[in-house]
Length: 314
Image (cartoon, rainbow, N blue to C red; front, side, top):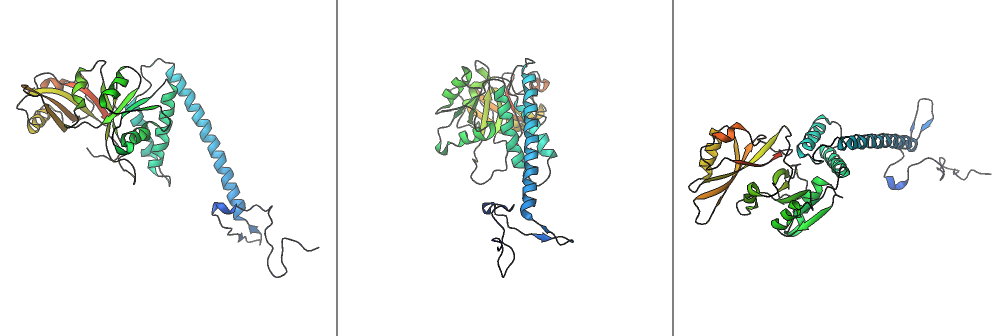
C-alpha cells in the first residue's frame, strides 16, 4: 500500500503529526542536512526553544514570588510609607544601567515600573487622583504609565478637587500639571494642612515614543520625598515685590544652590511675591544653605524634591 505522505515524483510530504511549527508563527522550515545525512528539523529546534522559554518563564515567576515574600517582610518591619519614589528611581536606574542584550532598555523600565506598582499596592491600598480636564486624558496616561495600568485612579476636573482627595486620604498621590506661572497651584503647598510635597516629575522615561504624551506632570503626596542620589528640589519663598527672576537666581547661586526653573507669583496690591525655585540636589529643611539667602523675606520652605528623569541633562 502506498505511503500517503509521499508522492511518486517528489519527496515525502510532512504528515499532520510531524513536529512542524504552526503556519501562523511565521516560521519557515529551513531543514538542513547534517554530515551523517540526517535531517535536522527547524520545527524541532523551535519546539526546543519554546521549551527553554517556558523553563525561563517558570524561573522568573519563582523569583517574583520570592521577591513578593521579601516585600511582605519589609512591610512587617513597620516602615512609615509603602511608596518611596526615590528608592524606586534608584532601583530602576541601577537595573537599566546593568542591562545589556537585545531587549530594549525601555522594556526593562516598563517591566519594573509595573512590578514596583504591584508591590507597592501589596503593602496597603495605593491609589491616585489625577487633575485631568484637558483633551485626550494626557495626564491620566502619564499616571498610568508610571504607577501601573491597574492602580486605582480617580479623574478630577480641578486641582482643588485632586488635592482634596489627597488631603482627606482618599488618594495616596495626586498627579497635577507641572508647576507654571499660569497655573500657580504650587503657591499653596508651603501652607497646606496636612503638609503636601512635590515628590515626582513625569514622565520619568524622557525618550518618548511616537504617540506617548509629551506633557509634564508633578506628583504630590503627604509623605515627604526620599533621595535617589540624583535629584532636584523645589523651594517656596516670599520675596520683596521688586524681585526678578535674574535677582533670585543670583541669590540662590550665591548661597550655593544651583538654580533651575524659577516661578514668580505677584499678589495684587501686595508688597511681596511668592516664588517657586528649583535647585539641584536633594535639599532638606535643615540645610545650612537656606539660611544664607539674603533676598527672601522669610526662610525658604522645602516644598518637595524629585528624582531626575531618565534622558534629562542637568
